[in-house]
Image 1 (tube, rainbow, N blue to C red):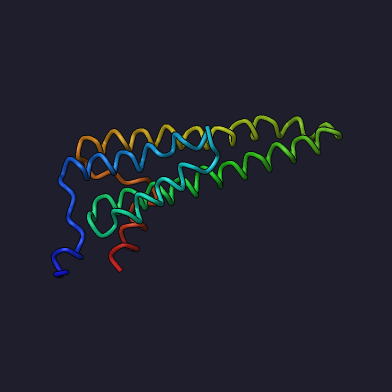
Image 2: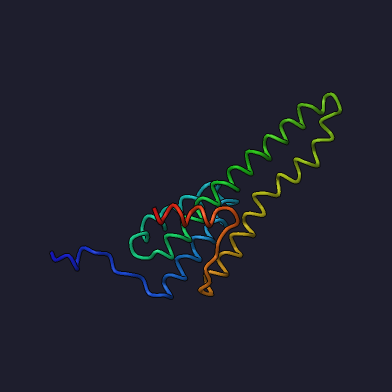
Length: 142
């Protein structure tokens, strides 16, 4: 085999947009399966990281975003509901329920934000998640 046969073929711009969009849309799998969206974003990153810097960047962003806001937000919301339930025995917990309800919206907001990223990637734009995009870019550069 020659080195040409061993090196991965770069993706076409249309394929790059499609795979980047699918990486962001993988967040839609989380409400159904729990963590399947995270696994899908990871698989897209691992398969295409050597074939497209754009897909690598977008899929790694989607992966870290989902880990942060889906799992982290879910843990915060679950903890807030548990604390509110425990404290409701002494009536103070009832005041915690509005905060718990707001924290419950974090994973749902993550789904909406992922859809926004997918739409922008399908249009060929460079989408960056707030707080995560620059960190991922610096990680990929080093």
